[in-house]
Length: 127
Image 1 (cartoon, one colour):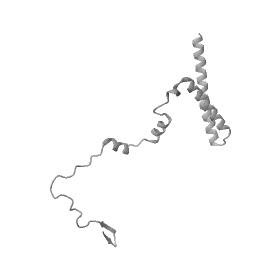
Image 2 (cartoon, one colour):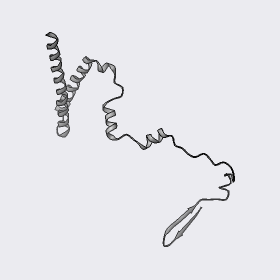
Image 3 (cartoon, helix red, strand yellow):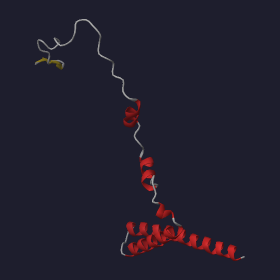
C-alpha cells in the first residue's frame, strides 16, 4: 500500500494495487452481466413508510379477531376500557393524569352513544 502526501494539499491518494491484481480478468471476451436491482426490493428500501402510516397500521390492525366484532363483546370491551382509564386517571396527577382523564371522556362518549343507539333501536322495534 502506498500513500502520497503533499504539504499544500494533504492526502492525495491511496493505492492498494498489487502485482497480479488484474490477472483474473480476461483480456478478451464477454463482460460480466450488468447489475439490475429487483424493483420490489429496491422500492422497499427507498420508500419506507412514514410515521403516520406506521401509526395507522398500529392503530388499525390488518387482521381483527372476529370475536371482537361481536356486538356484545365490543360493548363489554368499551365498558372495560372506560373503567381502566377512569381508575388509572384517579391515581395520576399532572399532564399524564389529564391525558388519561381525556381518554376516559372520549371512551365515555362512545359508551354513551352506544346506550343511546340501543335505546333508540329498542324503541323503534317496540313500536
